[in-house]
Each structure stands twice: as C-alpha cells, then as structure tokens.
Length: 211
Image 1 (spheres, rainbow, N blue to C red):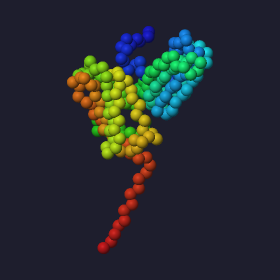
Image 2 (image 1 turned 60 degrees about the horizontal axis):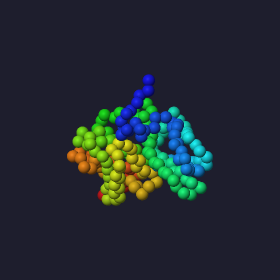
Image 3 (image 1 turned 60 degrees about the vertical axis):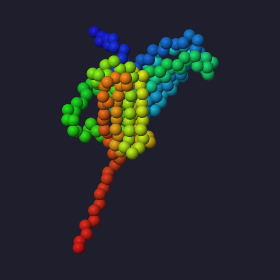
C-alpha cells in the first residue's frame, strides 16, 4: 500500500525521506543542454547535461540517516547552444533527521536544548501552527540579532523550510529573536529566542588578595 498525500501544500512534498532522490527531468524539446544546480547551506553541486536526459539520481548523503540537516534549492536550467536560456525551474527540498525514523521529543519547555544553537539551522514554517492562519497565502520569517543584523524572509507559500546559515557567516554569536507571521491574517506572531555561544572553553581566573 502506498500512502498518497493529496495536499499540494503539505510539507511532505518538500521533505527528503531517502538518502538518494530520483529527479525526473521533463526535457524542454527546444533545448540542446541543461544545468542542474543543487545549493544547500553546506555547498553547491552542479551537473551539466549535454544530451537529452530524463532522470538524474541525486545522492544526498551516503549514510542511512543524515548526520546534518539542510535545505536545498534545486534549479534546472535549459539552454540553446549553451548560452541562451529557454526555461528555468526551481524547487526546494529539506533534509531533517525526524523524517528518517524516531525523532527525539523534549517535553521540558525550560530545557536549554530549545534555545541553544551551535551551527546551521533548519527552520520549519507552516500555517497549521496557528488556527487563525488557516487561509494564509504567504508567510514571513524575521530574524533579528540583538544589537546587530536583521533579516526579513518573505515566502510565497505557507508551508516549507528555511535554511538559516550560521556557520562561517556574518551572524556571529549572540542572542537572536525569531518572528514567524502570516500576513493578511489575524494570526499572532509566533516568537522564539535563540542563543549561539562562542565555541571552545572559557577559563575564568580570579586572584585572591589578602589585606
């Protein structure tokens, strides 16, 4: 029996469930070549096709389960004579550990695991998080570093994943306030506060003075 998800806005359509993904290429009849770019937080994979190709097997990772989570933008571009673009299509897929078996559930709301981050983060967004956002058409995620950068991300859909690249970025360390909203609805903003501490060991040396 095969489970079919008929909701085109479901997160299932944007989630990877196997370490190798078969990508169907609906080749443009006028194209003479094509380029596939798969861009994630950890890097970019580029594959060129010089002949008509109907399928490409993307090896996402080699292990049975992923060691890291990521969000990928897949862009397929068709060319004539190698330079003239005739068509370009983009989709997004996310790798999350919970899609590969039992997910760890932490029911303690005061646990530091909910608020501390160390590297790149995959952030899910879904209008089902709020009953008042049922009829939402778009969503927006704002990330603001206390005393620093502010980033506003507007999505043309209401379900998906955002890859927040922290490693080797200008975000640095500190406290970050996240706000998820669904414009044109009565839904209140969903808020979260996250902290990224500098890696390494901190030694505090105190000198005892006698009077």
